[in-house]
Length: 254
Image 1 (cartoon, rainbow, N blue to C red):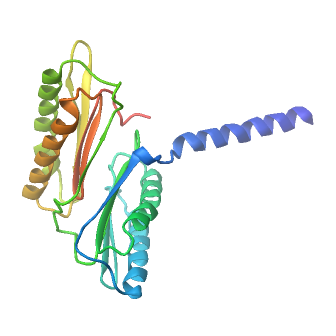
Image 2: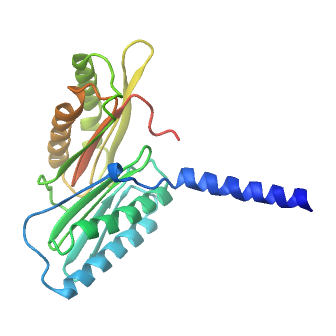
Image 3: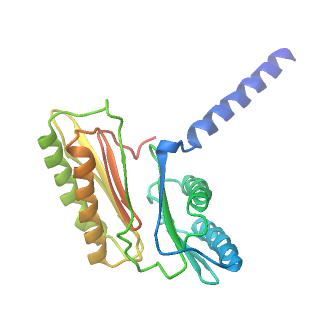
């Protein structure tokens, strides 16, 4: 009886441990937000509609099949969009959105427009809302950078910049022209001896090809400004509509 109890207890502990690894919760350094300085929501009805728009966003993302990493929600004059890499599991995307939405609401309380980002090792997402239509809107007002720790650096800055440019050139056109429903690509380029540098790019499918290219070009510039000149091991430049990520490891593998 005691052996059976211990076995059950160990199995329960293992399940909790596994779920804790899979369900990685964001720390403060994994999240960021920006609120557009265009005024405040002055109606309680709009604040309620904001909640509904976020709920509809989560619901719509959960219904997508095949999964493409993008969904939207609206309710009585409030609009929201969410974006995840399409190569992650749907449940991981939904969890990311569920962790990011209250964070955004708390930090942009009553503001007319805001965006928040969550960036974990394998999972990341963007959540944006506004009191005007944003599905086809390229919002260049908000950018954020996530990078590796200062003591985690690669070698020569010029070599890193060149290789990140190679990644950008490999992925940019492929991302913008992938399909009407998915604007995402992932790839790698040789880096040093027997190594590779990995990268991914994504745009919200609602924006046009030219706007996607414009956004990814800006993301590449932001990556260089924050990360390659500092020889950072990894970096992500994220906006309201796109992102560019590079790393020394294949971050699509768990």
